[in-house]
Length: 610
Image 1 (tube, rainbow, N blue to C red):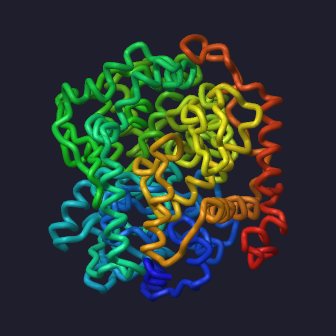
Image 2: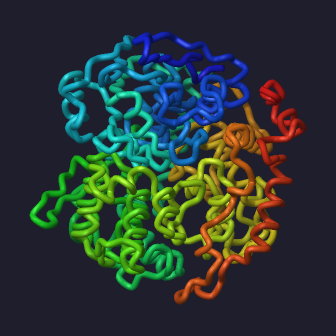
């Protein structure tokens, strides 16, 4: 297959050995790249039940056929490993420039296994790979590491962990380019356990494409279609544009998911940010949208530095409305500290909101007032440093919540619920509960996109559906998950793909794929690729002992919201369970993985019984 190199760099930290690992051509035909290849490698290399922090775990950086081409939205890549939160394989998607450089490196990805005796970093540049000592980088913040390695090796782009990853905090992520996070599953802790501080990558090759001229024409058309008035406005305000709108719809997580409406949402939204602390916009490799925030301000006498970027929607909600905080400067500093320590802002925000509610209910001795920006900043650092109660939270919010009786902690399979209130997006709530990687907003269907006539005719989704309607949602949830899984196999940014409505652009994406690889897919085949790659997550989870009893939401989401446009509409538990069962039937999932018939239908019969 064109568009790929057919090999991964295989790094054994224990043996200090670097080799090339050839990838079977059939895998590329079945999985294309990204998520699918990474999952196949982990199924081969890491037995289910492996401790996420053991040397036997592997961390995989994976690209798809578009990385390295300069295609808009292809600055993204995936990182996957067994997660310390779920105990199963979980993936995280991140933008910036590392994926682009990896796509020009001669490798489709990097496999990291074992455990180094002393801290190291991996340098991959000009076709050469080597491990170098990182004792001088250990303990440093991610921005410092980024600057040091770029100064030491001009032209590289860097992915690094901070002190939180070194200390094995479950909230730890991998920070790319100083301000892009491969967050959620706790993969920074996995790197910390391996004593791998960073990777630094510089590409040097042209990607081998099936039809370079055809790809160039389609690439230009894709960029032209992308930059309509709506997308330009999105670039100006970024993901933060949605805060006030979501609050008006009653689905902005507020007060630890006790409410869906934040009366001060406008004070932390994209418009207010643009008027106050925004000083610029950044982008990812090849993308004209430029949606990344760059801010400058001070809070409590501390400077918020532009190099760490600025808060996006999930951060503004997690460290803002979820904690009843309307202080943009406090949120911006907290975002910077999360990036510097190397922590996922959703995970940290949910943890702090849980602590605030626990304090209010008298479950802990500490007084942590709702809305207190100074307290939020302090708790970010306490978790990042693993100090006092912050140490227990860093060890795992789910474990701590069980110990103190905080049944209101918003977790699914140990993963913090993201900033989209499922009582107003019930299909997304199903995805939260059913995803093998824990609650994620980047995989499932957002019900609001179905509130239009004939949302996605190419996929057979031709009827408008109410965002509160739960019955019958399992079918469409699975369809859109397969579509998104296809995107995550390419790997493309969700902001350049349109899953529904008049701007649906998958025919052009498939044309780009044909020019890049020589593989031509129709709509059904596209969904099959997505389903096949998503199924690998369930296969691994089932074999690791994770069954359907874990496919549930926190009890709070089966209670009604008290006010706002989504008030009084709890998800009925009986209907929810019926849709979970319908979803299992549609997917061919079983309590311990996938049925043999489903494996055969997906072309994965070689994985039966392994």
